[in-house]
Image (cartoon, rainbow, N blue to C red; front, side, top):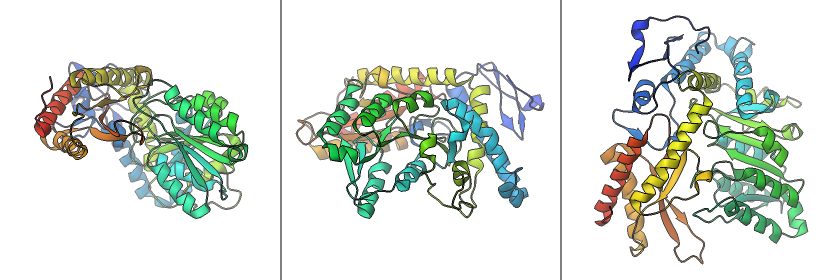
Length: 456
């Protein structure tokens, strides 16, 4: 398993549950077992959560393992030891990126020449949206499940350029792919031929945030291209890298033009890391959110994005350490993916049974995040329900040292129930079934306190 790593003092290796674990410390690898147990032992050995804390919100901000953070700090030491060499020569961070980029490209099934680094998915989304030559009357197509950065940026574009934003209304619970393809198809069919020709860009989540589901992105891309051949399709994969498989080859065949994703969430890379893939035909259009002193007319695609001023590039460099950690400690992508998705697909229905409610989507559309409806009485006034949801989130944090995300979904105006309340949970390798069972008990206890609600 461990390739060309220097030997270390074995007395500093860590042992847990009968397994010797590998820990990157001071540039050396402590060795060794690919079968390190997931759950609390892993949490204690490799993550820096406060004692007793259970993080059910990995999808929010991620959690970087200690070996990956230490790798980033070593890169920072190199940068400070000789700043000019680090920033300007082929022996600096450019060399590190050149070694990391092909590994990340291989992970998503892309050519390394088509991949650039980002600080996060939001910066990539902004780079694409602000690179388009919008004209008054042009159309941006979204769904109502789009993450807030999209409608916020769209509102800015509308004020600046006079373009339009159209949003396909998605309703929950989702019953299958048609819950997404249906609204998009109906919206496209409602447009006149002139309006369809003005669709410049369509943006879809690969894995949505609120609520988290896997969208039928290949079908959505095909729908857009059939309706408006010249429209670009951008996928927001903020939650995808390290959570579900990304197949750029398949996505590009279906009509996807650009893909952005985060590194700090499910890949477990440091905060401030991400990727953008673009098909060659649109690379000339794209500019990074920051145009640097090196970005002169005619600068190549990767060079434009690889240097965006004097800043900390070490989170990008440490993405390679995240890949190493996932391979050498966690046992590889297949083991990680199988575990976290299976755990979420068990935890969601388990909580729904305990709450007497439902999950937000069928199993096949559930990634390593699940969403469960909260058992609030329909007869409660709206404000009382909202207060209870707010108190639930605070109570989990302050009383139980747990972080999960209660939230509210708004229904269309004609719906009988205008608001429904849910809780989003993330599964990760540092959690196991017993953690989710404790979460269920905590939720029920807090709901009972806020409403004297009797639930088994």
